[in-house]
Amino acid sequence: MIKCNGTLRIKKIRQSRNGAFCIADLSTDFGEFKVKDPLLDQFEEGEYQGTVWISEIYLSQYISYGKAVTELRARLQDLHIDSEDRKTVRPVEHSEPDPLDEVPTPQVPKKLAPVPEKRSDWASVKSNKLKKPSAPSQPAEEQDAGGASKNDATAQASASGNIELFGQELAALIDQHQVVKLDSTVDRILLRNQAAALRAKGFAFDAKQQIWIFQTS
Image 1 (cartoon, rainbow, N blue to C red):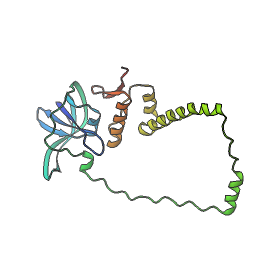
Image 2 (spheres, rainbow, N blue to C red):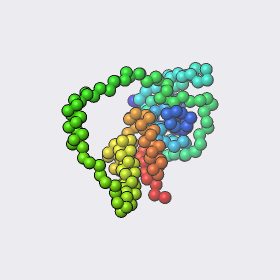
Image 3 (cartoon, helix red, strand yellow):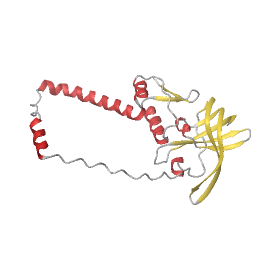
Image 4 (cartoon, one colour):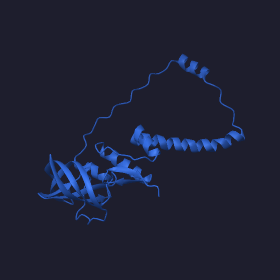
């Protein structure tokens, strides 16, 4: 593990089929490195100074427009931001591939869904006999109340979507507009979707604390 002071120049790449992602140039006293770690995907484009913990330095290659690109990368274990300057960073000279596409994902064989057992005729007849008669049409008053119930259903669907994307605990914090801290070790696409959803809900990322804060104004 290497602990050092450094400057991260973070660039956002938007032309990706997996959603926008961030990469960075890291400048230190002992060299310059490329950083393409998932934890950058929460950041806004700009220049950040602080302390970085480097767990690995390695060579990486990829093909871009028929050319082989070799770069020296640093894998970050953690970082602490002291100052930031959110500004547009000079665009890259070549198209940057999505880190998700650099290493092919192993193909997992699909599992066949179990075929449900066929019920006997007696079971079908029995179930039909147990079915309740259809409810009569609702009066006008109940139909009016149905509009409100539709709104409630929409709200419940939104809450259910939050739970599916963030989990029960984070979804509750988001609904209450509380501070949210995401886990950068989860699947990278999931982290990107979570960050995009928080921005859409009015949250902004605080780079120094690495938390999401709801913007009241």
